[in-house]
Image 1 (cartoon, rainbow, N blue to C red):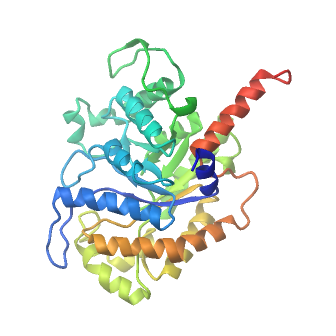
Image 2: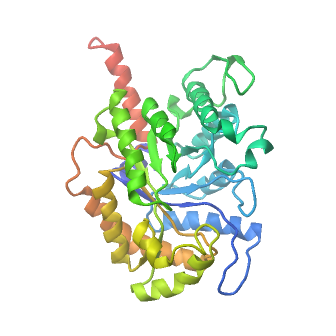
Image 3: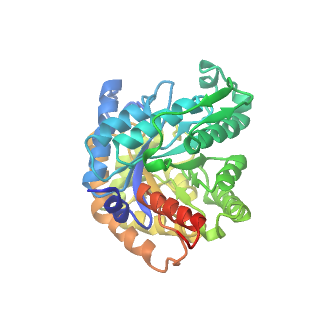
Amino acid sequence: MNNVEVGAMQAGTQFGIFTVGDVTPDPTDHSVPSEHDRIKAMTAIALKAEEVGLDVFATGEHHNPPFVPSSPTTMLGWIAARTERLILSTSTTLITTNDPVKIAEDFAMLQHLADGRVDLMMGRGNTGPVYPWFGQDIRQGIPLAIENYALLHQLWREDVVDWEGRFRTPLQGFTSTPRPLDGVPPFVWHGSIRSPEIAEQAAFYGDGFFANHIFWPKEHFQRLIDLYRRRYAHYGHGSEQQAIVGLGGQVFMRKNSQDAVREFRPYFDNAPVYGHGPSLEEFTEQTPLTVGSPQEVIEKTLTFRETFGDYQRQLFLVDHAGLPLKTVLEQLDILGEEVVPVLREEFAKGRPADVPDAPTHASLLAAAGERERAAAGPAA
């Protein structure tokens, strides 16, 4: 299958899953997976995502317990060798504590190995102790994100780079290798939970903006997305509705909602990320978390479009809070068989013609060709 065929299969809105790679005890039997088991489970989940017809698998990046995905490109390279269609992405690549030169090299290499099925999401990271481990200061998080991404953007677009900034040694006559596949860098999303500066950065470059959309009410993310859309248009990349938006979400499903709530409640109540706070019912009312039947997931996800406008990527978190692998794979079966096909059909209805499809390597390559022909003029 060539890149053009892959791109055609993933037009419109992309649907997929993302993982944070947590190692969390199962509250129902108190078992704790080993790091090895959790890593193997994450890769099995990715293969299942392709099997059931999802478009995207994205992994987080963490360097502290209880998380395991410290080397996303290693994991995604393994998955690339075992898949044919799945877009491989990150749900955070730490632009603050990683060297932009190494990001440029690692993801260009992955892009070649995966025949273009690669993009990535830039994030600051909000775990304070991680910053000094990599020689950085969390109080400089925003300036680091801005400067490091400016360098990464340049490294992928200029064959020879001269550069000097605040946070790393200067570069003189430097060439990042390998060069991006077909001369087209991986598409970049900028992920944010609360930082308008990151929405501004995404808009400035004409990149995608991914709203985490998990733990906070929709009104919070609506403000960030509205800001990004306005600034995207301000910088001349297109209209507000042509901005490239992605959203997160959380789901747990069973055939009927009562079974879903009963089964998921102990995981919710004991999860480090949201346990011991609002009740499950309060949380599902106030945030995107949906615990119920497939139809309830469909109905709530469709409200995202009403709130945020037409958007290009929807990723669901399904493997957190200690859920066993068997349960997660069942969730993916339901997503692939009962939920995503309906969402694809509904998202396509009434979609304005000028709203862009989700970016793929094929579409980015075609757009680059169009820009070259336009620059060459009619004589070309």
